[in-house]
Image (cartoon, rainbow, N blue to C red; front, side, top):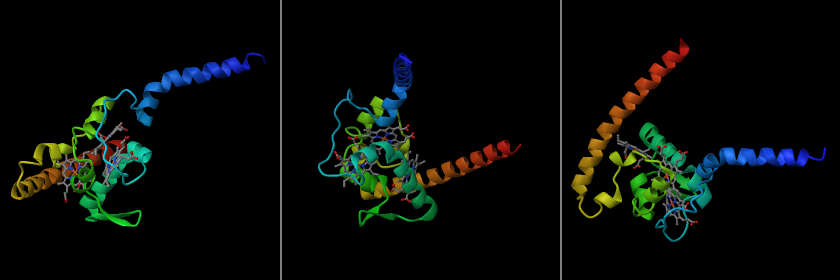
Length: 162
Ligand code: HEC
Ligand code: HEC
Ligand code: HEC
């Protein structure tokens, strides 16, 4: 009996060491990260929740807008436009100084900015007409992407059914 404690401790230590890169990634431990520019006030949801779930929130938003044509959602009794550029980037004014600082550190590289307006790149130079033209082009691009994705998922399903 006397060494049960040690065995249990050993297992715990082993599990922690084994899973630490994963845990750090999941918990978003950013202690060694360069500083980000964070606005005053509060985010749409509590900070920890945003840290962990912002990608899912953005995905849900995109699906609502693109598939169901629903553009607003209620958060804490307020109508919020489900928009990456119009909502998130209104408060988080710089992708470079916020999103990218953390993403670079965590080694993720979302491809969203191929189409969505990036305030760092477009703020001072893009006119409303240019922005509208870019949005129209992005829409076409997204439709093609979407068709491709649907096609691929059909193929995967067909594969799985075999
Ligand atoms: C009304 C302004 C506002 C909007 C809109 C907003 N944020 Fe935030 N966000 C903040 C503030 C302020 C903080 C810092 C909160 C804190 O320190 O408690 C924050 C924190 C965060 C964090 C956590 C940062 C950290 O330190 O870990 C993430 C991630 C984030 N926001 C992403 C987003 C995304 C993605 C969207 C759009 C879906 C969004 N935010 C919309 C103001 C906003
Ligand atoms: C505090 C750190 C942090 C901040 C700040 C942050 N992110 Fe992230 N983001 C992450 C992490 C970590 C992941 C990867 C999560 C995963 O793979 O499960 C991620 C993933 C994403 C993804 C999904 C990418 C993919 O390929 O699946 C999107 C989209 C995204 N972030 C958007 C944003 C936007 C927009 C902002 C700025 C408004 C932002 N993030 C700010 C940590 C952050
Ligand atoms: C191939 C181009 C393309 C890429 C890449 C892309 N999107 Fe979109 N996205 C669009 C288009 C077009 C719309 C529809 C715009 C509209 O109807 O207002 C849209 C709509 C959205 C919306 C809701 C409307 C808005 O104004 O934001 C969200 C949220 C969104 N996308 C998030 C993302 C995220 C997060 C990524 C990256 C993981 C991403 N998108 C990558 C083209 C793209």
